[in-house]
Amino acid sequence: DQQVKQNSPSLSVQEGRISILNCDYTNSMFDYFLWYKKYPAEGPTFLISISSIKDKNEDGRFTVFLNKSAKHLSLHIVPSQPGDSAVYFCAASRAQAGTALIFGKGTTLSVSS
Amino acid sequence: ETGVTQTPRHLVMGMTNKKSLKCEQHLGHNAMYWYKQSAKKPLELMFVYNFKEQTENNSVPSRFSPECPNSSHLFLHLHTLQPEDSALYLCASSQGGDNYEQYFGPGTRLTVT
Image (cartoon, rainbow over all chains, first blue to last red; front, side, top):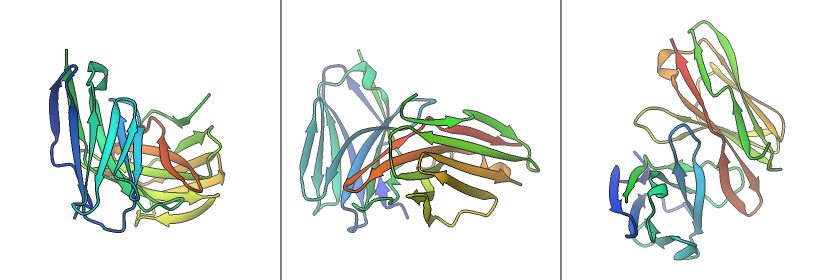
């Protein structure tokens, strides 16, 4: 059974609006969460992360929110830009060096101008 | 050259061939990883090397054999693969310590005929 779930395979947003990508996890042992962005023919690119001791982390246009009680995290992109169009992966792990990341299946974001 | 590089980018091999995938990281990281991404599936961890020692083998068949000669290089030796092994193989590295972000290479697209 999948431990990290991204239930929306795709999301379409207009340029300038907010994009909200969601992720749920089942394993309460996870204590570190990451978002990656992937363009075709490239490897995933690290975007932003959050430790379980926080509920929000912000980096420019990107903000990740963590709700531990609901085992839910979300990535907000404001304002959305056409260059943000890509596949976004949520990943979770134990906060431990050399530990695997457990990935969701990804959400394809399309930002139209 | 910077970041994480992988060669070759594309590989077509027959089921009786032997080939190797190469990964090199120029980030001074201490941990390296092999992941596999099959169609319609999330990225799945295959192997982890932490300070050149293999610390995780995620029940990978023996037809995949990793090698980590030093902290900057990682190989994946392939022999007698099956068509279902066709996938995108991604290498990643991470610094270790309190830094858990993993940085990915562009991947090798493998097709087994």
